[in-house]
Image 1 (spheres, one colour):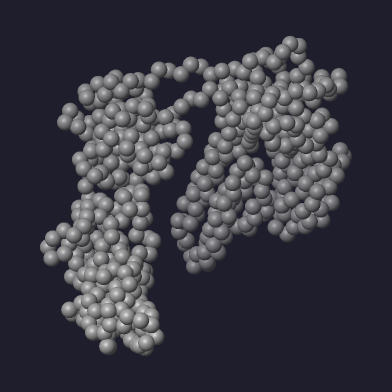
Image 2 (cartoon, helix red, strand yellow):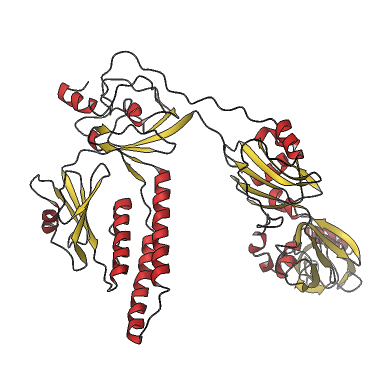
Length: 580
């Protein structure tokens, strides 16, 4: 347990609570004598974890379907957008980036059947020695000296050696060995037409796949072409039909041995359904028919984990409709041409996951109720008082990092729009603007790569703020430090021991002083708890970081002020002194 003095200082962080029981991931609740981060010395046993409010009853399919038939929206607003039928990228659009047109011209598979014009190597040794490269003649034969014509038309490549050996054995019954191989095939030219970007006649070999010739024609037209209606025609008769969805999903592709003059026809795109939301395959899916069961389409879309609902909108005879249903009700819905379905994670879990980093004992991940607050969880995090600085606890929150990033990007866009589109009155002013434009472009590029840490300052004069925790929060309990880190535009960036009598400029002087590019009018001090101080010479505490910002080398005062403001925001959000 804590000593009286330490316990008293840490108890000031909290208000009494009796409503939390935190369960660490993969561990039992903590025990032992290690004090908690909140230094909670309370009486009685561990209270129960606060639960979330009961979830509202989801609407049944009959309820939403009844509303849909009247053309009204039922249930919660469907989180889907109104999309024009045909908008978006078709499923399989990246298929013809795989280099099918680069198939090797000598790639003859074992199932290939020989045709006139193919070249066969025949070697015979023993009682008779023959080594020749023979061409299958128009009658489908090869002529082997002392043996005669051997028919090969229609013989599988895999059976070639056995077929020739049987023919030779009828003449030479003893002491003869035979080896044959298919050296090359007669080239073919195949027509590709229909909905492809570049219809034409393309050369290949008979064993090439249909994908080879379609790729040569530029793939399938993304707006008009079908991935499910591809026909191989021979003499006006359909030889085989190809459904590329079977190849994309299961690797199935019908085998075709092409002949000279065959035609591949890519049909018009059929009915499509737009799929979006929390899925791996967000695309336009072409239907094999007039409709498809929604749950069957969800299998092709590859839903991400925890998807719970789907919003469906479209047009029927009764008029437009929009419904929002739980995932287990999709089997009652059939989708038609032009429908849109958006899958969403719309589940209010009663338990969230919060991580802990820094100087603490025990697990680093906790599962807590949605209504858990920071100081309640700190009550269950054990720390070593000699190592952990419990006065400098802070939070890293992903939602804050996203907002900081968005604000930074907006500032950079305004900077570009304000300056790079400004006109010049004279040639000299134009030259200066050209130099500054190059500087600004480089600055915007570098600044855009900064990733804010999403730090939320929870330290207050009266202790730690009892904020409501959110999923993905990371509680930072820093280790006690006796050093001060100095970085940015100083001659030597380094760490040094903290001294109560020194302020920011003293530490800069001990680091060799300011660099030539330093802004000496405003120094930034990032405290261990996430707070930021700025000024000519701010105070410094143990564990702080002193950042010297760069000076902005532009003459335009308004432009300089804008860049200085952005540089300062970056220093606060990411503890980085970005250079110009």
